[in-house]
Image (tube, rainbow, N blue to C red; front, side):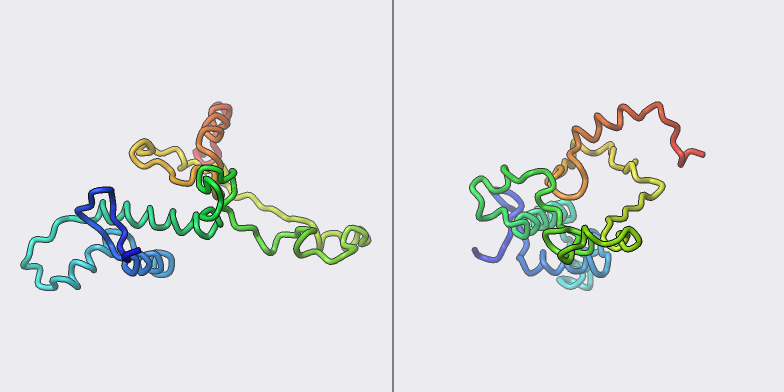
Length: 177
């Protein structure tokens, strides 16, 4: 591989893997967005601002999103599977919680025979916040910006989720109070 990531089959714009990896780190650590990162690259290229630079925010945003998608697939072990991405099961990219009790991984032998007074040590405890229905998951621009990993990570698949939400339309929304 030559170290660049084209945006399409006949690219007019591309980015090096180093630039994409740097953006990925800055996005997760410094909470930087595409606009600020591209603007920084423009300033590093021409700090005087005398030359007109084409706007590459949309193209870079797509490349960064595709790069993150490919990294996620790689880390999920989908690269060496036959039809790897297509055959990824729902939730197949989600990382297991190592703190959650699981008899096959992190519970001591005999955990199921402890007295009732100590059973709480090995039970899964979940908490729900006030906005657990992911109210903002229904977005207007979803057709223009479809999910790359629909249901493969933590959120559920869009279709079944929307069908479930339709059954709750008559419920009074607590946040509307």
